[in-house]
Length: 152
Figure: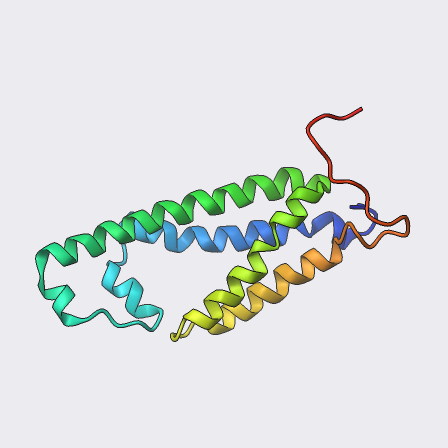
């Protein structure tokens, strides 16, 4: 990807911001600042009272929320590292991998029934826009092969 214009030079920051916004719920779930039932209810899927009244099922819901918290933290930190290194350098594999973000925001838009739909639309537009801005296949010379670990 050519790094000639300022949008191309700084598009990686949008992915860092998207990842940082994903770290917040991950940390909240891991630190139990928000109960699992409260977290699920926030996104519009009420937890049945039968689950909340049974201690074993409530414990499993709490375990599941901690597990999701660790997954969110790990995947978002990985995004920060890839954005700050490979995507920033213009490596095509990173550009291709980051198409995950617009599709993830679209999936969340369809899944959530709560009040987070606007943030999903904004996230999808920003990440898709950053990818289209930095399209490595839009050069006049046509697409070059993907970079590998072995350079001449």
